[in-house]
Image (cartoon, rainbow, N blue to C red; front, top):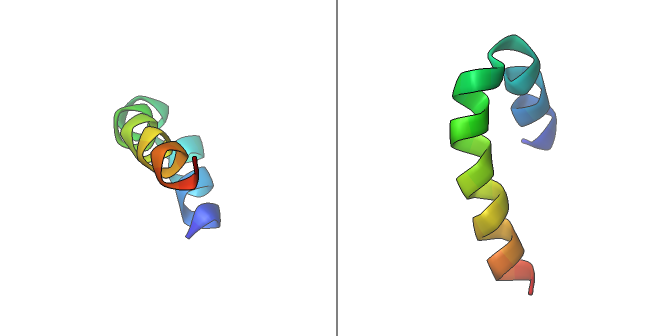
Length: 32
């Protein structure tokens, strides 16, 4: 799954940034 997110980021940076930023924040909250 992580690889897919990285691949999406490479293909469409703007769209992925909108999608990945909240996902990273959510993961950070779950891990902390």
